[in-house]
Length: 251
Image 1 (cartoon, rainbow, N blue to C red):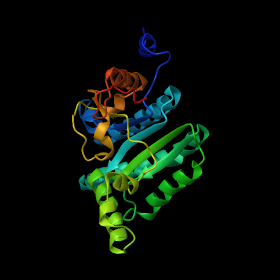
Image 2: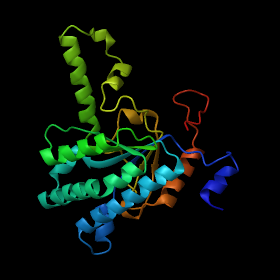
Image 3: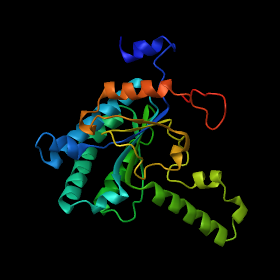
Image 4: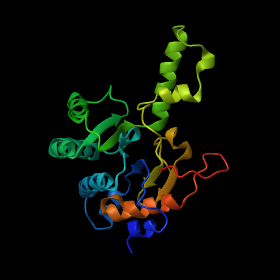
């Protein structure tokens, strides 16, 4: 019995979370276990991303957020950073048309001011071309760190207070949320991390307050639809109370 069929016993259809976020981890370890260069692991990771975006659309997930490049990743060896930037360029140039035709709306979160002009232009092109698509929202966390995002929100609020447009008493959790990088998007219902590591690594710390966390041993290059379905099946077994006493489905 497949996972969707198994879930049919409890639900009329393969219910999925509205918003899934993924920490794509393990490219380097996948490569090293095979005696391959880390660059090959990153290349295979892009293939896994393609599979996952297609699977998310097929399964009816509304929002897929991926941790593609963290603010801390700049500290990696220069040749690896160049390889990752090259993969990003190739992914956008080669896959953007297919994403657009498939109804994927690309959004980018993270700091952009210090990015090179060509990378910034590619990100903006992806957002502008897919702006009106509605089948799946693909949120790309690029040059992103959750602490940095929260700091940016605090700075924006501090400017409003200093200008006299906002009293300090108006700085609430809701106000901070409204000043994050994508305030209109719902918090992730499910956060998946691959490779067996069990930490968030500065990813969506504010938004993850009530997310369900699923850690899978699979290295990212081997991630596929069945792995995604398995994580969703685990999510469906959880009771989401959001601090209350009554479980909520969250789907």
